[in-house]
Amino acid sequence: MENKLEAKNVSVFYGEFQALNNINMKFKENAVTALIGPSGCGKSTYLRLFNRMNDYVDSFRMEGEILVDGNDIYNKDVLVDELRKGIGMVFQKPNPFPKSIFENVAYGLKIQGIKNKAVLKNRVRKALQQAALWDEVKNDLDKSALELSGGQQQRVCIARALAVEPSIILMDEPTSALDPIATAKVEELIHELKKDYTIIIVTHNMQQASRISDYTAFFYMGDLIEYNKTDIIFTNPEHERTQNYITGRFG
Image (tube, rainbow, N blue to C red; front, top):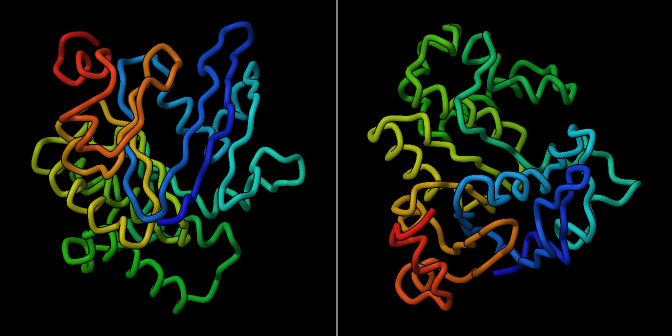
């Protein structure tokens, strides 16, 4: 498998506060990488580097390089809107727009200037199928997405991210607001999607990380403590701190 993304000597500051300390990591293509660690350890800050979401924070400053397909995405010539077309983001709480299911999924396509109705229909259908939601909503596409259950809303958000045909999907605790049944559906979906996408997921749920990821990175106080294949992290970690965290002795 090729490396799809890479962090080289990455440190992040918010004003005087250092949130991440000299992180070096390579992410494999068509794999799921889980970022784990206690709250406030820098996981979400790190995740948001890959689609430049931290740019919205006034005091944000980064040192080092973030490479996507070998290109430094913090280069001053990079068009951030173009970058984000290739990198989908799914947030912790489902955040559908107060629009129909169809309009939610078509949103990014319309922003890109796609007006052809047949193209929009095909892409919306494909994205909903990929998000394992088509069969549940195909007769209700005009219904408000806000009328759906929490799990369905999250899958609408996943479909919205998929519709613009990204190559990378970032997920920030995508199941933390969902019940166990909806969580299982999203986990199943992640497993299917990695055939076509490179996925990075932040999760607080150790069982989830062990179930769905190929690689796991353990962060603590802004440091990357350990990064390896998931089965090694969960059965034979190198560091005692990793062992203590995944067995619930701290954090």
